[in-house]
Amino acid sequence: MKVELQILRRANAGDTPRLQKILYEYKDAQTTAAFALHDINENGCTDIDGEPVAKIRWMCSCMQKKCGACAMLVNGIPGLACDTILTEAAQNGVVRLEPLRKFPVIADLIVDRTVMMENLKMMRAWLAEATKADETVGELTYDASRCLQCGCCLEICPNFCAESSFFGMSAAMSSSRLLSVLPESQKKEFFRAYRIHFYEGCGKSLACRNICPAGIDIERLLVNSNAAAVWKRQKAFHVRKEEKP
Ligand code: SF4
Ligand code: SF4
Ligand code: FES
Image (cartoon, rainbow, N blue to C red; front, side, top):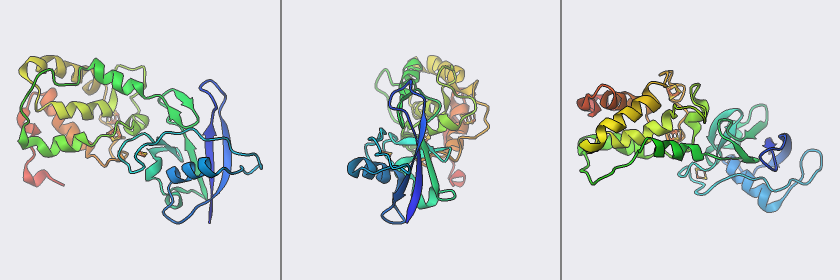
């Protein structure tokens, strides 16, 4: 069985992109886009015009939906290549792979997501001194800790762009891990950073709600983080049993 892979390619950052079409014969019904890219690079092939396909540049590490490196657009929707089963993703037999659009392209499917880390640095999203974990919010902070920093939520967000002072949901995820354990000395400054770089720029449209490949319950974390950082209602950060999904 075959699927037509359409891959938006640039050898270098400034090049004009071109769409290369490859008729790819997949191994089985569970073959992922990541496997196909790896397979094409390892074994070589020709495109539908008979031209040899130059090595496709893309990023991966874990191949198990754990690192976020392989985030890209799949038929226009952000997702992980290693989480994209070709038979499920295909539309009229076509799977189109493009780099994320909110970040500068380095080559082919690789983008530069440095801004995500720089934004966390700007928010000073770390603990400056030892502190004690609050076990009553363990479930929430664990959920937030599963963030891969893949950038899919930023890609889908109508309010995020790399140059903006609004840092998007990925920064809110890292923030929400800190909110319940911040020492008093950091609270005022960090709450202010949360308000400026997330709360005031977020339209609460929840376009990012179901896009997270890690399956994080973004809405629940958002509600609790806003309550803690903006309304200073630390108690709202606690989850009652009946609130659990
Ligand atoms: S919240 Fe989800 S979509 Fe956003 S960066 Fe983290 S893992 Fe990716
Ligand atoms: S709720 Fe809307 S504006 Fe806020 S981070 Fe999600 S997509 Fe962006
Ligand atoms: S390669 Fe790690 S998430 Fe896809």
